[in-house]
Length: 322
Image (cartoon, rainbow, N blue to C red; front, side, top):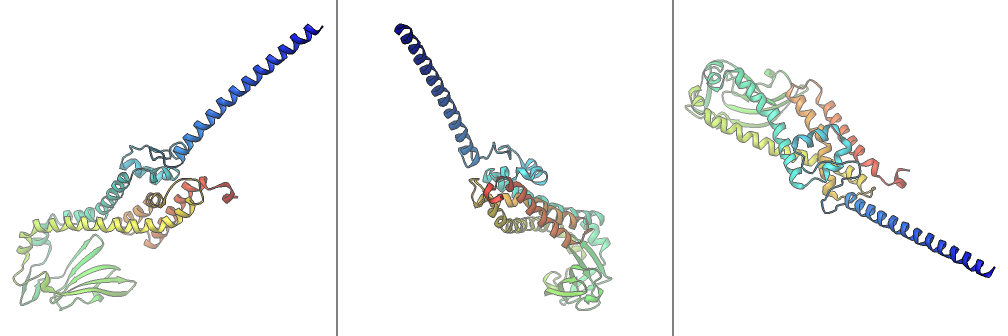
């Protein structure tokens, strides 16, 4: 009987030992799997070797070009966090191309359409414009002339030294040319504001005629090119200022998450989120302000802030959300 008990106990001990070993083996496998999972999350959740947030639901390709960035910015607000962690080089390229694209749309296209409508500069100066001549610091023209360009209107009337603002019709920016003075006027809701005033000789020096401008057409194209680049640079600064304003809102969200992102990421996120706010006013201007600018301005702000909220809200810590 004792032998039986010893054998039974031995069998039980071996079974217990086998179960313990099996448990330890499974536990070690689970621990290793958990460590790998945590390592992957740390890498993807913060700023790992590839500096990307892939794996958290806002994946983007590190190799995406401008068009992909633009479409994601416009249509996929949940991807904005991924865009914000693209390389600085890609972000700068996006910013520059956006500024060039919008400047082209609001400056080059309207100017080109106007020039084409006048059948080119040569026809504009020789046929469309009245004959004019500058002498004794005075400009003399045969008739009045009006030219609508991108964002402003040129109005020439040499019947008086300075053009009377009562002759300006709609609200907008005007460059008026009288016989003695050139002025830039901002007209809004019946109120006028003089931005600058210069003697007519600054542009129409003595001896200048229509033929003088025809000979200067190559230089005029160069001026238009430099003006385009200048406007694009101004747009970059303007959009960055707006991104800085939006980034205050974005940074408030990011600080309440476990995302390992810094303020530069918040700024990039804000710039991408502001894409609608950049496009809408420029499209509206290119179409001749078919919608009141104030409404477009408010809509752009609302969409930009809403996109930031959509992108970051899912990652706000539970205790904050509750």
